[in-house]
Image (cartoon, rainbow, N blue to C red; front, side):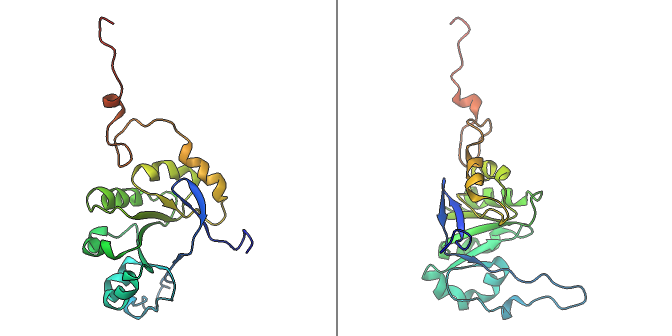
Length: 187
């Protein structure tokens, strides 16, 4: 299999092959009825389904989720609290960034980690670029699907763009001013 055909992602701090596929529904066309999530066919294999599809097809997908073949992705306009009771069933949770300038996914990731206690793989999907990776890691992401027109190996370097952080977050619970040993006045 050539590199062009491989599905490469960043997991942790390395580039790896990935066997997951993201199920995306067609955008509704003006004047046409919206796609009913209850009628969507979820293909076989390891699939990351939209949150709204999971919510209406939970009973149909539960056995596949138990086998580790179902993940769920949360849209930037959705609330992860809707799946809080189901989190333990998923192999992974992804957060969609519909465009580079939409920062709602950072809050969703933070809430999944801190408020909802998600400890499994948290993946960023959508319009994911190198410039975002360092901050994405700070709020709890540990896997990244870089936009198809970008070099995943170059994007990996984005995780090391900075050597220190000032604020507390998911990756560093204590802010810099609390970590720094201050010199006493007489020293």
